[in-house]
Amino acid sequence: MKRRWAIVGISSMALICAGILVRAERKNRHLAKRAAAYRILAEQGDAKSQFALGAMYYYGRGVPKDYVEAAHWYLKSAEQGNGNAQYSIASMYYDGKGVPQDNSEGARWCRRAAEQGDAPAQYGLGIIYSRGQGVPQDYAEAIRWYRKSADQGYPQAQYSLGFMYYYGYGVQRDRVQAEDLFQQAAAHGDEKAKRALECDRKGISIDPGAGLRGLQ
Image 1 (spheres, rainbow, N blue to C red):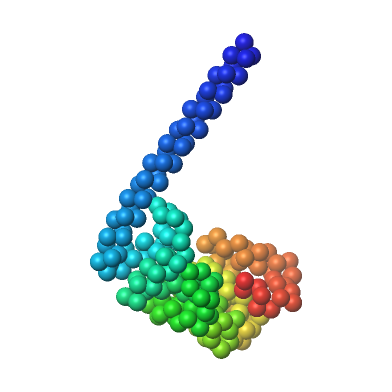
Image 2: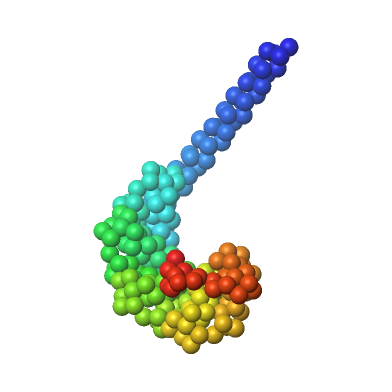
């Protein structure tokens, strides 16, 4: 009897695994078809499709992961003014993925996306200025771009702007303003902001001695 139930259990597991494999194969075929469709439009110059194809190569969805191909299509889309592609290629320049590592080029593309009002790019440009990566370090500029992003409700920017106010980087120290920004970020689920509020309630420095490393 025990052996019979063991066989039944093994058979059931085999069927489950087979079902998972079938679903995965279907998903892969679907993604491959999507990538092929994007490629047709991308080669015709459609910026959105170029960005989408770049993302599929970047993450290896429907096509083999290939950072060089991802960068190729991101750049084509970015050159046509696609903000998502501009921010994506900026990240690739900073990481040296698919393109030579180049902070200055990364900053240039991030700025172009930020100037279009892209909140993540504005936040990213704030980090770039706060660290001086590819641009001269400038806390006032960091504050300006963090604020633009924070005003759009981007929680990471709200936390980072609060951090700047908390320590007085590029702005007069204002713990009340910092707490308000932390509250906004925490309401959007930002874990750093939640920790900062907890430390503040306990009278503990939110990042003792770390300085701007707390932005990482």
